[in-house]
Image (cartoon, rainbow, N blue to C red):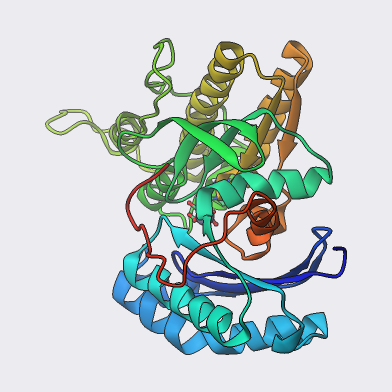
Amino acid sequence: QPCGLLLAIESSCDETAAAVVDRSGQVLSSIVASQDELHARFGGVVPEIASRAHLERILPVIDEALKRAGKTLADLNAVAVMTEPGLVGSLLVGVTAAKTLAMVLDVPLVAVNHIHAHLYACRMQAGRDIFPAIGLVVSGGHTNLYDCASAISYTLLGSTIDDAAGEAFDKAAAMLGLPYPGGPWIAKAALTGNPRAYDFPRSFLRDERLAFSFSGLKTAVRYAAFGQPGTLNPPPPLTPERIADLAASFQEAAVDILVAKCRQALKRYGRRSLCIGGGVAANQRLRERLEELARKDRIEIVVAPLSLCTDNAAMGAIAWELLQAGQVSPLDVDVTPGLVR
Ligand code: KG4
Ligand code: ZN
């Protein structure tokens, strides 16, 4: 059915998003209303503020997505919505809108796992089936490694035991006096720094477990920048040169960890391709190191394009695959805020 139209809705964290995607996977429109400016002064997402902003924005965002696609509600054949994981109040806004539309329009409702959708963004980028593969989702909220048997069959292999990778970038940036969200700023500062200036810890690097930890790295950056508590000789003040060296050394350690775990998972599960999604996938050094890995181990690497890396609704195109597999959701489907699977 080449003319089917899907409306996908995303409100799991702090972006209110809607997209219209046709049956062939073509994205006709993708609207993302960011709330960054509402949360910036708090240095992180405030759940109450996020859900209230979603409530104000969800209908205009849906309207805009339809308008940009040149479609109306009557043209829709299905409605998809991210139901997990995320902030409960945020998720509920998108899910309630999606249920209402599905009921009124009498079209199927498809519940989508937000993290699986991040990996499906790689499939959209490739424009062809890239599975089976190992998948890594690295964002401000997640550091999850998956074995992806197919476009809709994802097994969680491991995740972080403390901070998410993006969160570590953000916190390291904050310590160094760089703006929020800090990932891009660390990457920028690192360009002129020496990645070997500081020998920061790489947790689980030589460990069998497919798990991540970034809190030790974060503490090491703090001590290197400001000295260990009780030290008699504090380090010199933070000059732009020291900031660059600290940023480069931090980034190198974080990237080392991510690349090493992907490599371990690829070997263990005998997969030949690797998909990467989420905001940290935008990191240039990570991309370079993955390309190195791809050449050395002769595997294929698919990184989601920038527009599909950060939170968006277009990646809800995975719903077409779910529909094909008969995975329609009941109208009383619930949100699953905390569980990552
Ligand atoms: O996927 P995303 O937009 O939002 C969620 O967290 O869901 O990811 C945002 C995260 C932030 O922590 C941000 O600092 C990080 O991605 N990020 C980066 C880069 N660009 C964004 N981290 C490292 N290097 C980058 N170039
Ligand atoms: Zn996300």
